Image (tube, rainbow, N blue to C red; front, top):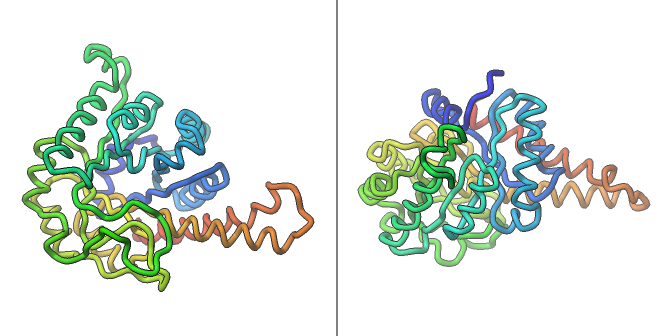
Length: 300
């Protein structure tokens, strides 16, 4: 497999009308599970770490781990700084060597969101180095902006999370999105299109607003990213991907699978004290979920 950059992978996904799976991890086991699932299908994959996950794994450690897999296997596995709420944290991730970052200013005013997102884009373009050194650096960090509030926690909810409104007029407005992309220069946009973080206990989230995805995609001219993918139906994914979504984020479902696998590992081997033994069912559970999602996103 020829080593492509993340930008090339996203462009190819856009052309083929498929999506790259983005999966969040909190530890080494989950990283291996995601990587093995992608490798078994020969598709590119993005590893995401939120601010909380970065605190746990380590910012530079996450970079080193993902880079080690990319180098050893010559594999298109990339690292994204998921939901980052300040320019400082975006800067930290870029300096550490992340392939992409998301500034999430969805809770800010439109003007403030534009201002900080633009600052992040400018920093990424120069990779924190003087402009003349950019060619030497050879780095191309993608920046994603977020417009429209979809919640902040990857949990299992009984009801739609507080502050998330799925009515037509609270979804991302296509013309606002167009202005946002033009003003900031972002590479990708995460809109609110009936999606939200986390998933409902019943297992099926409300339908995505495909018309709105089509409307936004048509005017913004950049790839769309669907956050909060846990709990959405296969048909919703297929339609969203056919209409401009090039990256899909999954986190909650992996967390649930990991926890269930861990419980199995512990209960079936009550005397086992070697973590690499009792963690095996957890790794397998995550790998199964990821593989299933990747097949769907890549129409395999």
